Length: 369
Image (tube, rainbow, N blue to C red):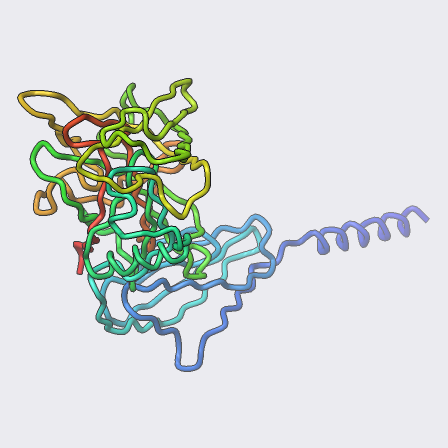
């Protein structure tokens, strides 16, 4: 009887071990007819189906070099050619490998802005002029007007602090070694109007600028005078002032306990408040201390690096490296490329001679094409 009980216990133990055994990963990748093909400077995204994925690790090799350790593959190629991609999935049950080829096609792109997704300037002396706006305009008609300007490499203004524009291109701007792009402005010596640059890639693949944003951490990013999460609200004036140089023109209140006014100057007689906006306008971002100073005349020297409309377009210090991007917590991120750019005015400063410090945008240049 004891022998029978022992034998039965042994069978049950072996059965339990068999049921607990971990199977090796099973990889399924749907390959298009004719194989994978993509234009250069466009995202190739591959999402394999993996069974037995418990405690699994991944390794993606591109022509023998590991380029990713995630479950999905995301890559953008800088040049045409043919490449070998290999996925290795490993768990306690074993290792499974899948290999396939990718053809990257040649393609020609336009080296400029091709789409404006949003345009929302803050009040300023060039508002309703660059571009022209009327009371009949809406957010959408102004987006179109800004797009018409920027796709023609013509200039728009962002107004005072927080005013912004979001734009994109007909290709992905690749993060190569060194500097990658320039946001064109109209800065010149001692006349900087710096705009903070945000970048994003089309992570969800829908072609819209609705993915996570990353700030280009320029020279002022970690300074004590820089205010993160700054917020300002502008108030639409009830009437236009009789005084052409009215100092108490457009009221503003910020989240630092300060309040003040945007002045009007005699050189610009139109309303400075965006004609298509409501009674108040709240804008947010990182606030940088202005360099505005009075010598024999008013000057605004440039920051060291990392901003739009800060150095002249021909100065190497106007160039931006995508590798300077950081997330909302200030942690550096490694972006393979970007599809969208947002620029907003980082300053709140003005004087009686040149008016407010207002970022202007006049185009974009990809340094890698």
